[in-house]
Every structure is written in structure tokens, then in C-alpha cells.
Image (tube, rainbow, N blue to C red):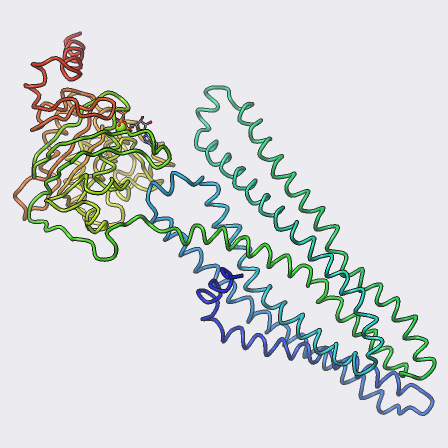
Length: 585
Ligand code: ATP
Ligand code: MG
């Protein structure tokens, strides 16, 4: 209940005037609905021997005009209730997306995409129904019960009590069923999330599935997920099918009793025939809201469940230890980075450090190479320096400042990261590079810097060429260089390049290295950016001022290319091997 109240406060309260107007029209609808049987009773009683034909005429006209008015006020009340529902859905989706963009890799690593998609679409829809139709029905049922109930009591309290007993019993049973329903619909949502996840990841790998003739295996796994979803929903449908008709059934029983008891009451003149007709009509009128009462309880129960699932996304906090007032770096010079006893393990494997006890200095404006076997922790180190993951306290400092105290947005704005796996959005090359900021001159400069100019000439629309999903239209090397160009496009003080030259030939590699350093910084700055360059290729490391050699998460050596090639170790081995390879014609 508590999350529901906080949700109403946060999202629904501001639309109170919609709701209040909606309630006014809803009350009007119910009031008119209740008047009709009264007129009907008057009309029926006017049919009697001492009746008044004029009165009957009047009743007919009144009932007709009330019918038309109901149409108008009912439509208005619905519009007034449903609009806030849609507006809340709209805002909720915006907020969720915004939050998803704020949350860091450590969060996203724990969540399946399918699950997130299912929450943003299905659970939000459940909530929309709750705050629109759900709230409307609460007032509708209450108003109908109160108004029709009052008239029924006025006609005969005994008859009213007799009518309500079966309904009350049915509601108690339904309440028990709802608890079961709650569990079942959660299971159904989870099964849907698994199913969506399987579809999403399979779709991304369709060419691989086909290439490895794995259609059958993937199809079978889909069947398993799909079956689980079917089972969950079938069970849900059973529980619903068994419980939901109980309320209308109770209404039917009431009606049967009414004809029996009420009939004899009318015969013995305790009530008039007109009153019996009116009473029967009231029970008929109440059946609709009662039927929707069962539905309403289900809507609330599903809405609350959806809300819990949405809140676990919406209330997830980005991990920003610096708080709202982080330190903003003075950008007159490039950052100097110090690593002190840096040991780091990923949150999902806290006992397995990926980096152990690393101490190193990266002076301002220097180019530092990171060299090491696969899995030695190079990418991880870049992720910590760029704060994609937060390092443990007091292990990384920037210009003497603890990195965790830096304002994260400010730090990101001066750091340019080109990740190991180039990721392209399904948009134009230009958009992929500029990421929404347009500067034609800078774009040209960057294309040149990333050695993309000749490639672009061959493409149909140059920089406006759409790259297809995840860049499928480009070659691997082109994709890598578009991602590199994105990194070089922005003004940075720190450039982190994770193995970005692996898919280019030696000639392009040399060209890239020559131009890399000049591109990044704005014209008004004359000092060089600090640069960290990860590569397996010794040739890419030659120009580095210092090379850190990592092995199994430890810093095992460091020095310049010349120094490292002279002493035995992983670097020398790689150098001998690679220069040997280069010599093979
Ligand atoms: P490569 O040269 O192959 O790119 P690398 O030196 O960049 O290797 P890292 O990506 O830093 O290596 O990985 C180091 C270790 O951390 C690996 O054992 C890897 O399994 C583990 N690792 C990487 N990313 C994660 C993650 N998100 N969660 C858990 N473990 C991870
Ligand atoms: Mg790596």
C-alpha cells in the first residue's frame, strides 16, 4: 500500500482537477441511473386501476431524457479519468528511460534487457489502467452501491439484507483467489521477461545461428520459454475463470431470492409492485459494478505488482559517491593519474580480484601504453579510470584528487573512451560520431584523424550513410574507426583507447597513431592530452612514453619500448614474435 500512496503523490496528485471533475460527472451518471428505476416504479404504479395516465406519459419522457443525459455525462467522466492515466504513463516512461540512462554498467550487468523492456512496457500499462479505469471504477462502484443501496434500503431493509448476503460471501471467496492471482501474475510477468530476453538476444545473433545451423537448438530453447509463459498464463486464466464469475453468480442468486421473497411481499402489499420492479432494477444496476469489482480488485493487485517492479528500476540510484557537489577539475592542463595499491573485483565476483595491487603514475600529457595478455585486466583498468565502474576508495587519484570525489559528469565530459568493442547506433555515420552535436569543420578534421576519408568516398551518402543495426553495413575496420572518430570528435583532456587499432592494417595504424594526439584537444590548448593506449601490438606501443605491462591483474613491468625489449618478459616475447611475423614476406 505504501508504494501505491507514494506513487499517487508523485504522479497522480497533480491531476487532481481532472479527477475531481471526473468524479462530479460520475456522480451525476450514477444519480441519473438511480432515478430511472424510481420513475419506472412511479410509471408502473400509475398503470394500476386508480392510476394516472398523465403520470405514465411523464415517466416515459423523463426516462428517455435521462437515458440521453447519461450518455453525455458518462462519456465526459470517462474522458476525464482516462486522460490522466495516459499522461501518467507518458511521464512514467520518460522517467524510466531517463533513469536507465543514468544507471551505470554495474547496474545494467545485473539486469536482463528483456526484463527491463517488459517492465517499461507491460508494467507501465498495468499502472495506466490502475490510475485511469481503476480509479474510475472505485468511485463508480462506491457511488452505485451507495446511491442504489440507499434506495433499496428505503424500499425494504429486509429485502436489501437478503440480496446482499450472497454477494458478500462471494466477495470473501474472491479475496482469497486474488492472493493466488497475485503470485500467478508475477510468475507470468517473469516468464514474459525471460521470453523477451531470449528473443532479443537471438535476433541479434541470427546470422550466427544460421551459420552454425543452430536454428533447431534456439527454437527448442524458445519453446521452453514460451511453454513456461503459456503455463503461467493458463494457470492464471484458470484462477481467474474460477473466481471472477462468483460475483455475478451471487448477483443472480440474489435476483432469484428477490423474485421469491419480494413477490410475496408485493402480494401482501408490504411493498408496491412498482417498488418491486424498481428494486429488481437496482439489483440489475448493481450487477455491473459488482462484476467490475472483481476486475477492479485484480487491476489493483496487478497494478501494485507492476508498481513494485517499476519502482525497483525507478528508485535504483546511480552509484555516485561524490554526491551533488563533486569536485570539478581545472582543465588548464591534462590530468595526472596515480594508481595506489589498486585492487579491484567486479561486483558479481567480489572474491576474484581482476586487478591486484597496482601502483603506477601517469603524468599529465603523457602517452602510456597498456600491454598484457588477454584477460590481464587492461580493459578493466580503463573502466575504472573512466569510472564506468567505481574503484575502491583511495586507489586512483586525479591531479591529487580522489577520483571518487570528482563530479562524474564533469569527469566524463573531459574523458574520451573508445571501447574495445565498437558500438554503433543504427543511425548515420555523422550522428554516430557527433552524438547529436553538429560541427561540420570538426567532423571533417575527425574523419581525417580516424583515416576514414577514403572509406567515406566509397559509401553512397558519405557521412549521411545509415550504418544499419549496430553498424552492420560497415566493415569491421570501418566500424572500429567510426567508433574511434567518435572518441576523437569531442574535446578531451584524457583519451582512453582500448585496443582500437586491432582491425586496421599496419599502414593505417601508423597514420592513426601519428594523428591521434593532435586531434583531441581544442585549439586554445597547447598542452597534449593524457592518453592511455591498450594494444596487443608492440608496434602501436613504440611511441608511448611509458608502457605498463600487466599479467593476470598484476603490474609485472614498466618502461619504454626500448627498455622493455631489452629485458626478458612478456613484452620482449611479444616483440620477438611480432617483429618475426612482420619479417615474413
Ligand atoms: P583482452 O585483451 O582480451 O581485452 P583485458 O586485459 O582487457 O583482455 P579485461 O576485460 O579487463 O581483460 O578482463 C579481465 C578479467 O575480468 C577477465 O578474467 C574477465 O573475465 C573479467 N571480467 C571482465 N568484465 C567483467 C564483468 N563485467 N564482470 C565480471 N568479470 C569481468
Ligand atoms: Mg580488453
